[in-house]
Amino acid sequence: MSNWVTIRGRRLSFQVPRRTIAVLAALFLVNVIVMIACIGFGSTFISPLAVIRSLLGIGDSSNDMIIFTLRMPRVVIAVMVGSMLAVSGALLQGIVRNPLTSPDVIGISGGASLGTIVFILYFSHVSIRFMPISSIAGAFGAALLIYLFAYRGGITPLRLVLIGIGMATALTAVSYMLILTASFTPTAVAVKAFTFMTGSIYGVSWTKDVLTLLPWLVVLMPVALIYARHLNVQELGDEVAASVGSSVNAKRTMLLFVSVALAGAAVAIGGTINFIGLMAPHIARKLVGPAYGGVIPVSALIGSLVLLLSDLVARVAFIPLDIPAGVFTAAVGAPFFVYLLYRHRHS
Amino acid sequence: MKGASRVSAIQADKLTLSYGKKPIFSDLDLRIPEGRITVFIGSNGCGKSTLLRSLARLLKPEQGTVLLGGSEIAKLSGKEIARRLAILPQGPLAPEGLTVHQLVKQGRYPYQSFLQQWSREDEAMVNKALQATGMDELAGRSIDSLSGGQRQRAWIAMTLAQNTSTILLDEPTTFLDMAHQIEILDLLFDLNERENRTVAMVLHDINLACRYAHHIVAVKAGAVYAEGAPEEIVDEKLIREVFGMECQVTRDPILGTPLVIPYGKGRKVTARE
Image (cartoon, rainbow over all chains, first blue to last red; front, side, top):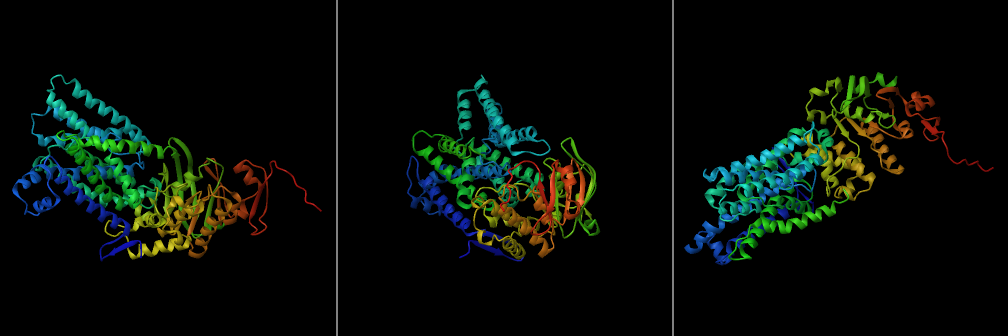
């Protein structure tokens, strides 16, 4: 049996490893099962069967209320934010050819959360709908600063990473300083800002959060997939990429734009949920190898799975307390980062 | 000169190159003869790699033009160039876990689009490249698991999949043991013989350069010191001027090409009667 599935039509042709198809199908199934579990667990337990009945529109009305207004939006947001952070990280790791990179490590998420903190502290009288815009602007601001500092007739990966790490630290410091020194900040607002800094998808709603995030996801994810083959040649080094005819800097700028926008939009809704962008692409590469046509969708499904599970634990383990999901992604992610540092200690 | 009478695959006119602010070549004219093997030799840091990279548009010249098969390279699109000319840079690195097949596939990039990622021609060319380099058996292996020689063959297969008439290589034999150096150079020699591809490369080993090259370009301190067939230009004077080394030039007992034997020190063994 061949290891590849070849699809050829009149205008299109693709070659997909059989393994990637199997992994995608399995991860999709696991995601669905975990989603049903996430909808079921909580202060009121709803059995998987009852969840499925409600989803099919034949459940009882008290369950419907809990499922559709309280738990579903949160589950859907976990899927969206998790997958967007994961794909953002996958793109970024490819762009800078550095496996120790992710939007939170190099300061893009830091910029997004600074944008959001500024909004929470100073513009809370303005409609909450503008909050994501402030956050995405922050992400682009940070990316632009990193770019300006790192650009010297081209961007070398190492320079980008070093400047990014400094930027991440500085931006987080500025965020905390703003929260702590704004003397007029009511405690409630400060708590909200701190919760946001840890990354929480508590109390999200269809209209406020899901609909705000959806357009970004729908536009950016396909672009990421279309650009997968450009990223594949960039992974071989700038000179090889140029040798096979890729316009390296133009493609890289576009990829950076997509990665930053994905992270910025995800942070606006989910807060600074760390390490998903770092971990998911690594797990994806272990499963399907380094080709980006596979890494991007597999990362998305893993990112979604990690955030679903983290949020489930955060929500259920300490009832009635609702812990920010970011605490648990960090609990898994920080040791993983240390492991990566250890493994790459010689390179 | 033999080379000059042939058609040029690549022609450089009045090329001025700098690396940062440091000028390296000025007003350089050069021709890479079509269908031949050209080898650049010279001491470390003489600019031969820079020159090769500028011929492949990886380095923009300050002044002057590079013509690829008669058309100005600066006016061609990246993909157009990539369908005519492939360059393998020195010591390329593949991402962890990439298989030989996945690497060789990337050579098809200039022929692909988002919807056409694996045409019949792509498949045929990749298979041909794998066969020509003897890598078909190893196609499913990851690059990191290969020996140095096999790895270099995989990269050469990628440039072959580009299906270009001209291939440039920057020190393709560096870090390889002698057997693997010969293996790589034999492969390039065969490609030139059988498919009439133009090969131009930088080599460190003068004796191997003399053995495989039809045309040698000796570079010294930002200028071409001499060029021509090895048997016509490689002598004691050239080695002294270009490499700053005293030697005796004799003939390779197997192929008759020039063989450079350095003076310098070493044990002396007198043959037993």
